[in-house]
Length: 407
Image (cartoon, rainbow, N blue to C red; front, side, top):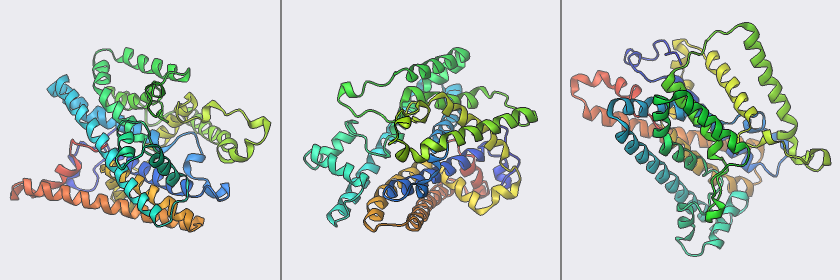
């Protein structure tokens, strides 16, 4: 990606950080929260009110997360590899994978305790609440469900994204080494592994007595590797393409979106008809059919080139808030998962309407922003204390241009 023109402050102009990465990660975080709060709580209502973004296309916010996380990994850990070598890169990657594991476990513990308290109060309705109840019944004892979760014997709803990213971070040094020495071979190997996933290649989780991943790592690694390729190899992608090509891409995106509507929106009704009993392979997010990859590439290209490049846009308060979420994606994601689990049984118990679900989404977004804002202030305070008084004016460089990017 080309660097943006000066944004926000003179200090930010010196920053090597691309604010578009934060913007897209923050946007993906809000889309995921919106989808989880509305779709998970609205299963008893008509389908037209369940038309969250995931139902209206072949790309999802998880693809944005994985792709941009690959870019961030390539930028941050790629520099570590270039300057300090493979050993430190492996060490930092494994440490980051361990942090992701702990974050996922702590979030599960918070969800378990909160939802169990709601169940004791009689709020035990809904798919998500029932899933925890099944874990409690299968693994007896207070520590049983926690041990099952810790060893991946059961991966509840919404808790499969971080383990996927944890795997990618752990194998990330191999991708960086491969792109440094054999770039074409590494890309071809990633494509070959992805192709194998389309023919049934997956982790043997069930044979080991473990819960299988909803997102097939052998398929999704192509998206993560693509992000690293963009960051490391910096392929030249023209910003202004001929009108014919741009028009063709837009028509393809619209056509695929319209094609997806009949199945993805009305699949509950159409499944009752013999003509629609066959589940289209391209509708499976777990294995990422190549049409999904193509669709995502088209939308990503269009979105990046349609973003305003003017200073006023990036200084606009809502955009700054989205960028703030993007700088603390791991924390924001964990808060969103907790809120989705907690709001689900409450909304179902209250027979919540579409308006109630929207109000819950706004409340969840507000809570996430508030927690992230506290984390940002803590970072700012720590940087102020670590700088001499004469250098406090350079604080924006320490925050905006920090090499330690989250998620």
